[in-house]
Image (cartoon, rainbow, N blue to C red; front, side, top):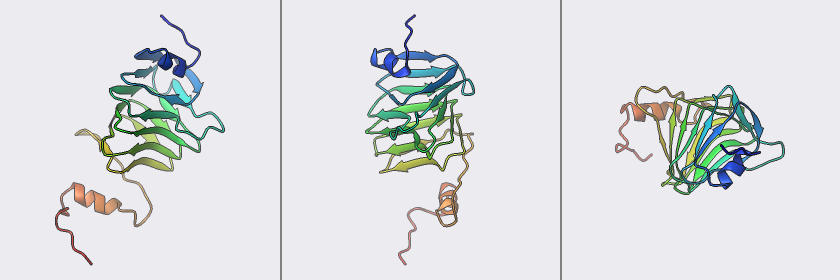
Length: 171
């Protein structure tokens, strides 16, 4: 068993399966290919963005085959989780809270599966830009929250096929 002073140190040492004991960790993390971050439970293992840090709390830039499980991600004033550049990531059984943006996805080849997570008390929940892919499995619940006129009803109607995406009328 190897013991490290930080999560990033374990990632940098090349470990692929990293078990994180209960506690509060104040560090921002860059993920690498094939890493499994496994917390002791979302209420027990909390990763917080350090004060004054402006980059995402957890960054998955172009990484493949990554899983993040059993953590609370807290990025007060920042982004909790960011994926871009074709990242292929699974987020499961996490609590993502108290952040400006909970999950930010960027790019058509970026694909993040969000399974049994709680996303709460964030200014923005999930932000998917530049054709990023975001999947929700059958039977899961998704809440659409936003200000008037932001497209919540239109999106719900498109998802339920009340509107046909091919029946666009120019006005």
